[in-house]
View 1 (cartoon, one colour):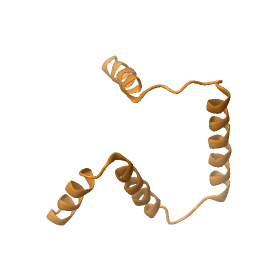
View 2 (cartoon, rainbow, N blue to C red):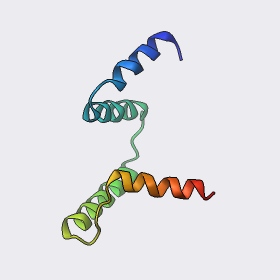
View 3 (cartoon, rainbow, N blue to C red):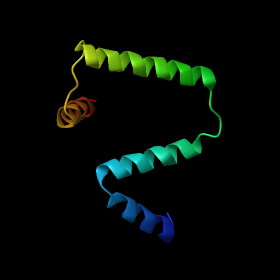
View 4 (cartoon, rainbow, N blue to C red):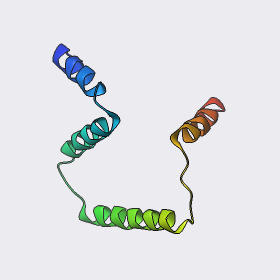
Length: 78
């Protein structure tokens, strides 16, 4: 990583979480030079389904610390 990129990363990491997330999303989107319309439609359906499951109470979200703990347990058990 060159100096310019390192400095840019340092500045980006100093941003609030919401701004970092937006920046990360924008950077990821910039890498996609081709959009698969069928895949995009499937993702939209999946997103709508998951939102409905959350809204209806069918599934319950977990707090990030709990998810991180569970992931660590899985990775430690490899």
